[in-house]
Amino acid sequence: MSGLLIVGSLVLLALIAPTLSRHHVLLDPVEQSARGLDQDGMPLAPSKQFLFGTDNLGRDVLSRVIHGARISLSVGIAAMATATIIGVTVGVLAGYYGRPLDTLLMRFTEITMTIPALLLAIAFAGLMDGKQVHPHPSWLPWHFLDVTLRPGLGSIFLIIGFVSWTGIVRVVRGQVLALRERDFIQASKALGSSDARVMLRHILPNVLPTIIVLAAMSTAGTILLEAGLSYLGIGVPPPAPSWGSLIADGQPYFIAAPHIVIVPGIAIILTVVGFNLLGQGLQDVLDPFQKPVKK
Amino acid sequence: MALLEIKNLTLEFGSSRSSMRAVDDLSLEVQAGETVCMVGESGCGKSVTALSIAKLVPTPPARYVSGQILVENRDVLRMTQAELRTIRGGVVSYVFQEPGASLNPVFRIGFQIKESLELHRPAAATDAEVVRLLKLVGIPAAEYRIRDYPHQLSGGMQQRVMIAMALASEPKLLVADEPTTALDVTIQAQILDLLRDLKKRLGMSILLITHNLGIVADIADRVAVMYAGQIVELAPAHALLRRPLHPYTQALMRSIPKLGSDEARLTTIPGNVPQLGAFPSGCRFHPRCSKAQMDCSENSSALIEVETGRWVRCAYWREGQG
Image 1: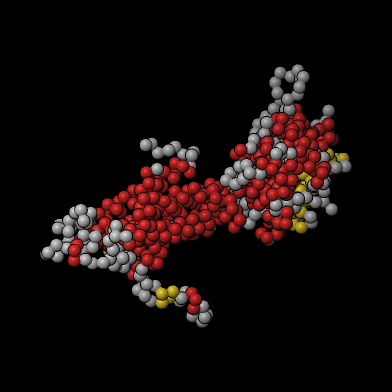
Image 2 (image 1 turned 120 degrees about the horizontal axis):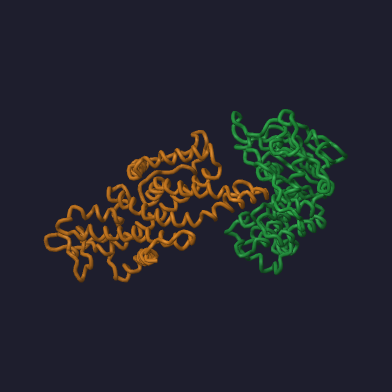
């Protein structure tokens, strides 16, 4: 379970980052400091004082990467949760009710799949310009439904969630299609269970192992997408240190100070590999009938 | 008034252009407290008929063409989903063939029985009632068994749990679709004894589907023999077993191996059950019938009452005797 180790230590680091900063083990990730620049105003290379060097504003790269884990992980996990909720709902409904709902939902899913996730996310992000939306007929006084679309942590995970649910739908639907024909589903209906009860009490618990594995694996994707969006400057707004924006910030200094780009890059790779390994490990644990992946 | 009255039920699969008639003009009654067996080869429509009683056959692909299914004088085929849910489990409970597959593998059996209680007798959804039900179906150490998962029980025990689930709602009619086929012979006998005992104690009716005439002899009050979607013979069990009238029933009886018989070969019925949608013209059994006459391929017989309570679908049943 190397995946669990990697993901576990990343989550732990992210959780204790503020405490570490308070006790001066880590530096403040946002505070700009003249100590972190040389006399020409250039970033410092890795040294004993700054383990991974400093960035163009004299901020400690190690501190920024560790604090960045808080943002990247929380956005990634929240986006995964959003995607999983949408994907499982659509997948279960499509698989359980069959045609014609199945056709409708699956064609919609496939159409969504054909649009590149990053482009779709950019389009969604473009909508987040601070305008008010009234998702109700104008003659109804339901102003509690009003939302203001603004960029930030809250909207970025929703955006990523809305573009990453399609893969989950297909797998869940496939499983539900098979489950639906099992005798115990028939038996439950024969006992007088409603459709909602059959889906929630009997189908969902049986797909749960698959959902957990899919969720772990899709977290790798959502983290990558968040990094991509932040790199393009439409993710989490600065000065919050997201890994993607760290890379974007360091890019102009790549020749002089490559560590600014490389360190968050390694963090992203490590996280993505970690979540994929975690997903694979979970699959071996949760599905004893499938042959384990050869080590 | 009969508890269950199936009147002229006709059910088809497939589209209206290429329809396959699985059940054809079937009528059957089950009185309160009665055990009725449906016998027939695989694919003759007995399971579909049984599932229809609570309208459990998915539509589509199935289509109810005509007929009525009256459960306590109310037509199941015209009920709303909400009404159907009160019938399912509430009045009619099912026990299926594969007990292992009919229990949800991810829940403890106590939880599953309690779910049945929650649906139909919410006030009684307690551990104590679950234990009482498990004891009723003869599960030893029921207090401990309620925490078992289905895979921890043997096939016979799983079937007892299924029966307990079916009984939890206190149904008036228990439909058992080949409840013993997946079990070995000694357990079969135990389950049949259990069903007979429960029927006596709880005063419910049983509709038992089987292809085993031995079970019929054991438990049935009346028997309906089905062939290719039709009832070919309907009679009190002892009369039918003593003197089968329809050539198909006679052939079925002959193909039971008998202890102490001198015959070297087991008699079988030649040919196969006709495919759905490709039934022979005239009497559907005539290509396999040893007593078929010239016109059997042209004229189909109606179900005729030959004695009180004895119905036969064969024009030459008299010639078939002796």
